[in-house]
Image: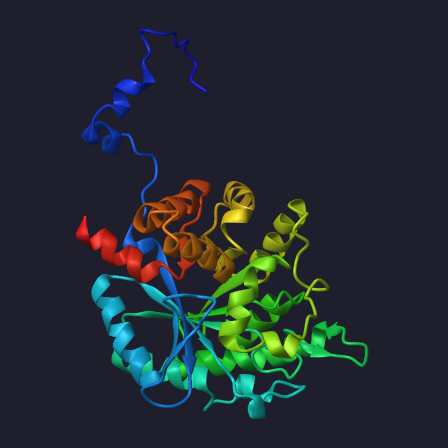
Length: 335
């Protein structure tokens, strides 16, 4: 707090709140379009626009419609998108071979986007859950335990296939130990020295992911299972700092906390401790809760969404992955 004594009425804090101009002058944090990353779900086919019931207003798009949408996002000034492919059942396997197929959906999407809109940042998800028959983020043993090192070997292949396609940022979301170092070494060895790594460093075993798993089609494969043996315990905070420190030492360029609003304390701790580019993901469950209240008329859409995004900035996030990115960009443009 301040080093001087503040007494009423010499100090009336409401003075600076009285007018719009003075509130604007002393605002400590602002949300701009530069803070926004738009997660998008993609499917095979043409002219495919599939509704996701648990995420009102968000759709799975085929690549032709993805391109149209991406052009709108560029016009709005959104700097980057994150793409998440939906994999058909016949392409899923125990060893997730489709994850690193150079002609798989995500890799084709990257090539298309970078060909037509090189200025748009493209982030790819490095994880195996969309590609495994069991919905876990890695290769499992006979007891269903996810094997760390074998999984990492496949994640490296996946990350390299994304970099070769032209991805600007690969984002390992799997939470395997040592995978950032392995991916960074492989990228360097193959000449992808400027491919950035956004590490999902503090990804919690959260109940907020349900709608996302519906969107990518992994919920049915998971069949009530959980990911607690590799994602973080929601009870832990100090452990998150250890995870972030390890990922930075291994070569991450930026780190992420996921989920977002229930974990803003982690965002603050990470930013204060490390001072590195720090991102947060306003996940599908957060989006679904907001939309349920908005559609019921219980909350005002623009006001509540922008307040929620401001909370990320106040906590120290440099950027926010949010399904509200497009709407927020439109509202900001209208200011």
